[in-house]
Amino acid sequence: MTIRRGQSTVELLLMIPVIFGLLFAVVELAFWLGGTHFTTYAAFAGARAQQVGRDPEAATAALLDGRATRDQTTSADGQSVTVNMPWEFDLPFVSAIGSVDYEVSATAGPDEFEYEGKSGKRASRYGDNNCSSGGC
Image (cartoon, rainbow, N blue to C red; front, top):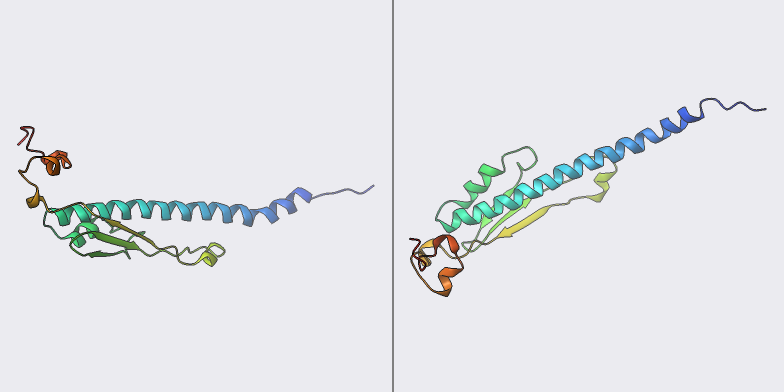
């Protein structure tokens, strides 16, 4: 008759690295998803700032000043704003994936002075500035 002692302890010790690896991978993925969310919103805010004649790079920098998004780059070409968030996973096994940079572009439309006070089909696309319905 063989007595098996410590089998569950050995199995637990073998599974602890796997459990922690999965836990850290989920946390890293959550940081990346949060960074993509903020980057997308910053691109929208930069496009809106460009539309009203402000500096789009200053608008995106104001939103992306956190630790997860501090290395972002913004480029504006007069038509759209592109924000790039470089990202590499820091975990030992997940780092084999490599770079998972996220880039998003946003276009807010023509400058406000091009459609402000106009009526018709062109102004109807911009409900906040639609003067044809007597809202001005």
